[in-house]
Image 1 (spheres, each protein chain N blue to C red):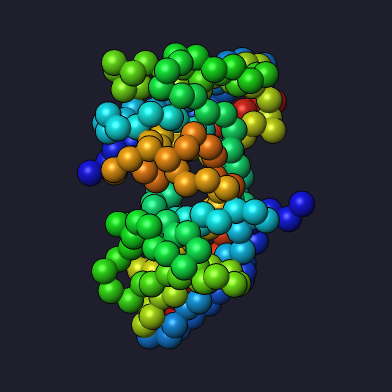
Image 2 (cartoon, chains in turn cyan, purple; image 1 turned 120 degrees about the vertical axis):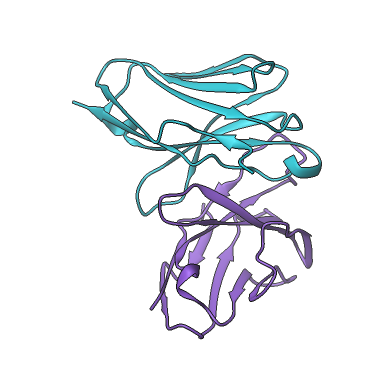
Length: 114
Length: 116
């Protein structure tokens, strides 16, 4: 029972272009959504989050969009840089029940080509 | 400002042995979470603990796995009688508040368990 799906296991983008990473979820109890970035042999690091009361949150080159009706969120990175190459995990969470702990997607490996 | 500390970083065990993984949360954090990442998969929630209490262990296998977070000392994830399928990276995360609050959890670097 996959509550969180990141359907693209990998994505390659040219440096300077936009990277768009997608995430779909099924649990309607999720009410906040986090993105984590992970380099090999390291733990995930928090990148950006969005609450369900918003549909967009921006932090520098990173913007997360949330479409609650479609149960879909996306992370945009503009412009992409080689240092952004990592695995990106979508991690929805919530305040009660089955959403109470962060649930991670399977991740998308982003490769930014110089 | 020490982050979440996990040790050991790498652990090799023979089938049937016990594995003990330790996690010291960030200073001031009283909520600890354990996640497991199997090869080619995402992170799977295992257990959520507060000091001396298991809050949610819905992701823990029913047998051989246990976790504790004592009043003093690190949180321990214990795997008895390890099997090859237990080989994975085990990540610990901590947060200052419970996950009923919109806040991120901070992760350690993980313990890579290899069962031979």
